[in-house]
Length: 276
Ligand SMILES: NC(=O)C1=CN([C@@H]2O[C@H](COP(=O)(O)OP(=O)(O)OC[C@H]3O[C@@H](n4cnc5c(N)ncnc54)[C@H](O)[C@@H]3O)[C@@H](O)[C@H]2O)C=CC1
Ligand SMILES: O=C(O)[C@@H]1CCC=N1
Image 1 (tube, rainbow, N blue to C red):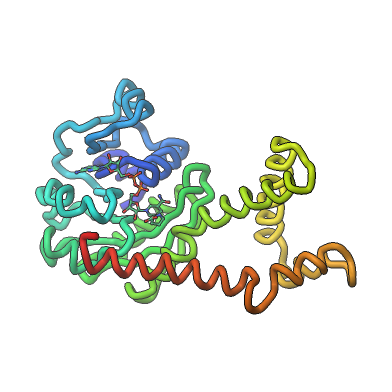
Image 2 (image 1 turned 180 degrees about the horizontal axis):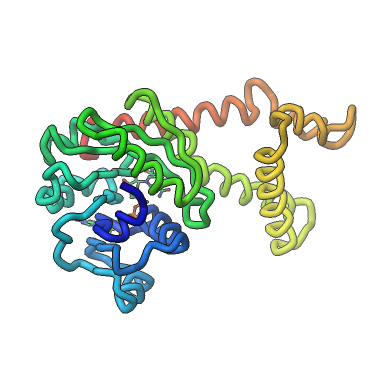
């Protein structure tokens, strides 16, 4: 099964908010026809309504034999939303869920223990083809189905395969939530530039380009981030003074990031246990 089979048999998207629409935009850019997509969402965006004019099926009957049902509702909405997909749980449709926290056991309780399910944790840069998604399949999912989920997520960026479901909460804390940390870093950098007298526009421009450029260099360079950092840092120069603040073992970015990632991962574990 490959992406052309997804185009032929159809893809159901349960919930098309921020993450669902980021994925959808990525797939459409990759050539998936809107007419292959069936969205179920009680609050469709203007963009979805426009896509419905181009053939996307919006809150219509489910296709008989969808290749994939992708679940992108909030964990708190799952109890209400998931039973609507039960009809597809005949073993032929692969369920792919991007919800944080909820375990395979939670889905199997609703869809049956033989339903093939892949848990995937993408991130919003998928909207521009630069996402990274960690995936893992449940017992009933076949290697071919895992390959299909991999292909689906590779259409919007990179993928990594996990060894165990328990790694998923750490992934949520790192790359699932991670774009928000980086956007916050841009905001903080821009505000700091303003505090040094730059205009808001100039500061934001410099901050965005610095983060995007450093990210691109980190990805392209054979050198690790530590060496790249040292390459910026002249002995007793300006960066050296800034890094004394940022790399303080007690108050610097290291302990702060550790705390932030742990808070996200803990919340993912909590969402898996409860309906909070
Ligand atoms: N936003 C992100 O960066 C990421 C989100 N996720 C996961 O994606 C899922 C969705 O998150 P977001 O897109 O951020 O939330 P969101 O609130 O933007 O989107 C949820 C969508 O579900 C719809 N919805 C509500 N009840 C529904 C129902 N009964 N049936 C169908 N659709 C229903 C809402 O109208 C909304 O459009 C969550 O489970 C989250 O853990 C995963 C990775 C990253
Ligand atoms: O904030 C959230 O719950 C979701 C999961 C990962 C990113 N956003």
